[in-house]
Amino acid sequence: MKFNKTVSVSAAFIVLALGVSGLPAVAEEFDEMDIEHWQEEYMTVVDRGDKAFHGGLGNENTVSCDQCHPNGANIHPETYPKFQTQLGKVVVLGEMINWCIMNPLEADALPLDDAVMVALQAYIHHERRGVALAPGKH
Image 1 (cartoon, rainbow, N blue to C red):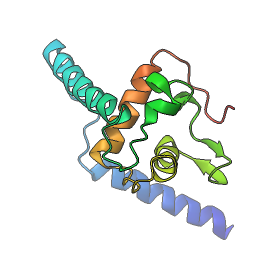
Image 2 (cartoon, one colour):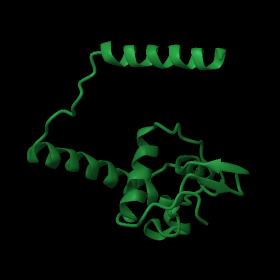
Image 3 (tube, rainbow, N blue to C red):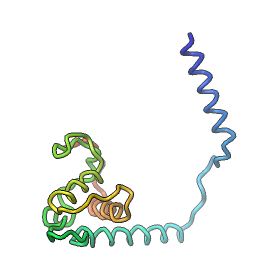
């Protein structure tokens, strides 16, 4: 009985907090110019990722991502998160990218929110656009 009362009080508090938070109930409006601008921004990041993927990470051993994964092939970003044997756990794509950066490329890992990490993931996902999501698939 105490659990139900606690849940009811918690639920009421959440509803009240959401109601007075001032969050708009609808999304902001946008038009074709907005979409065009956002697409240009996205493609700028994809281009940065393309350059980093093909040798622009500044590592000393000159290994690049495309030596193992030409044009982002066989990375399958649509399957993440998934278990990676190299890391011994379920990881997101950025963690696997960092494994490659630290091991074959022999460079320092990137923070997952680093602009280069975001660009690498944008490029990899862009190369696989149109492929259905399949998290956990091997």
